[in-house]
Image (cartoon, rainbow, N blue to C red; front, side):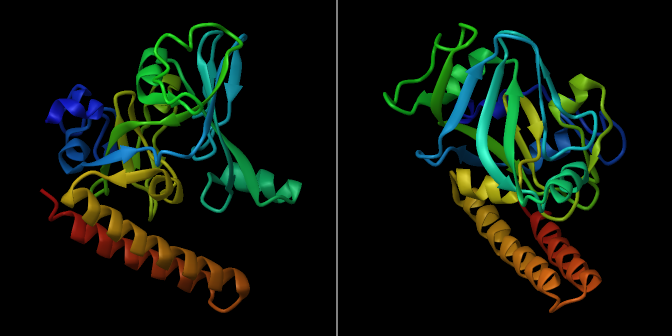
Length: 256
């Protein structure tokens, strides 16, 4: 049954491959803790564009050096607007300057074959096999694949996404609410809200993780809201979120 999950075919790089506490593509400590989620809710649309020229696509969830530097024939995915609250500080600062609360969430991929085999045409329901090869092509698609999701243990302090590794960028600190997602492309950390909205657990272990992350998300949202409304000091809100996440991490050590 394991062969169904593409993320499990990622080469195992062993422990501490990227440094003490750093999780990157194939890190055994996160592979061992991952549970199976189905990526795609059957309705959320992703616009996929086959680029006709070299393009830089912003990575909203990472610091400087983590953006996608794509060439003609590579893919750009557009997911829609997302709240800036949990984006990297550089994007929060930009949003504040522009007076906006949301920014367009985009990503890039150089693995065309994988994208074709994990996404269906939103109109026909067919997989996009051999349909993302012509520059200028734009397709509205629905993701239909599986990913591994791991709650970082206290020892997992930084994440080096596959894209950051390719760009030679530094690892990003894992903050409360940041999980580790793994697919055949490697490792990344999607926004918690996006993860829970666009993915569903596959088995009992996955459901337990999904439920625990959902409860934490509610605590995080409430604490953030009270702090913004002035009902709770920002420092107290941050402490409440940190304590809630430590509880989740302690619980997660018992997985598998």
